[in-house]
Length: 308
Image (cartoon, rainbow, N blue to C red):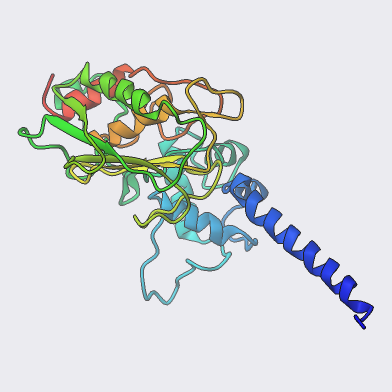
């Protein structure tokens, strides 16, 4: 005889499993930066749940670094200390916001925008700028990776291959879109680009991946970070497979070519620009195309390689 409690236990277990599956499936669609909204108005001297996550955010994008083995180390707590205030001021300076060190509405809104996963270059409390001395009277917002890092003269012809760990809907034209994105940079530089087979030798590797994918920079699901790329001469460019990518984006979709043009700029040695109109600006908007290189982008890449 089957115990009367067995069907009830089975039903409870089934509901638990269904909820667990729904939770796992819905996780990529959450907003990884959504926690910042609940911290609006925070300032030095407060202790509020979630500030440790903000510290990780600022550390991830190059604005905050706590000294190891320090007796006054608040890296893993929710204390709003002096270092956090300084990091927020640096962030506000970089995005031309009012540098108060307080998490005001403008700062929170900027921090929550989907963005490139490459950190903004910040060192000793200020951004590293590597500008052409001849253009000292012009306004330039481009930045280079520290070094700066560039491809050597003998590497003006760069080969790229595609290797993805996931299949992504809406990316059927990925190869042709990337070819167009590379061509935009070829038109203003001395570089030429060639796609080669996945098993061929190449300077650059491009692909879609999800979450942890072996490079130490895991993706975080939909929204948050959209893609990242390495500086010369590493040559890796990864797109988050949890995003909704498109060649003609709707309101909740990301324009694939816009992000590809941006990431290729990193592959060539440009870091993030402070100019919101530049391709190399760090944040993106859903449903918007931004594919054309700005004057700042062109000036930056030509300065980096002495093409002025």
